[in-house]
Length: 278
Picture 1 (cartoon, rainbow, N blue to C red):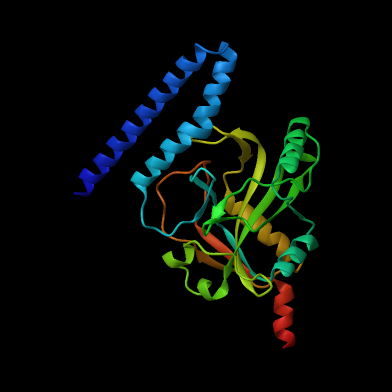
Picture 2: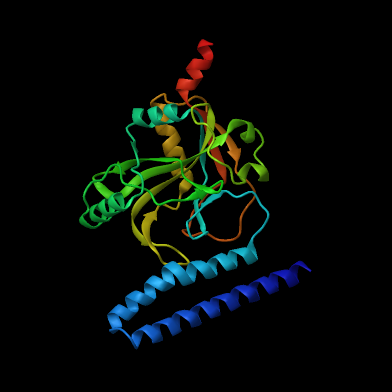
């Protein structure tokens, strides 16, 4: 029975791919008759990369979807994004203070102005230490905050991490329920900041949809260890514990990542000092 299901899944994926290619070819043939060839190619790329392929990939993921605990974020197109690989426990102010202490910058909010600033910095290779992040989703919402550390003066290379707040009472047992959509908790209280840290290394196109994006270092384990190491060296966090994020997901990724599925979790040291004083 399992073999029959696998064969049907592969046939469905093949059919989706064939329909997607057919649609892209027909779109090009149509716009090529209305526009110059260069503009026709540009228009076809835009529709294929940002509309047609994301839609068919989402449909493919629905065919392959398993009821496993996720260990990656989701892009705005509904595709798998950066892996979840670290967590910090404390208040919102303590989180900001910790990254300020290690010399990381809080990312600007993603607006038309900041996006244009990022495009100019990326093209001209000018420094933008507070460059905005694209929005990734976890718990049904975009990141609550993000931090970054430039590599040299280039906006194309940086260490960066996004965080989503999760109520500590819900974080006591990390199971399927933990990952369900939630509202942002009161971050004046102690919460678990679930993080996805990756290292940007330049310019690239996403796998599956070929959208323009930062290239990222595939070894997200190394980036997790780098971020936690920075915080440990500056005495911004306490003892680091390791947890498994969940079962293996076989639905594929937007970019290729190597991850051991381990989440490193530690208390923010300011909160730990407060507890000791009490």
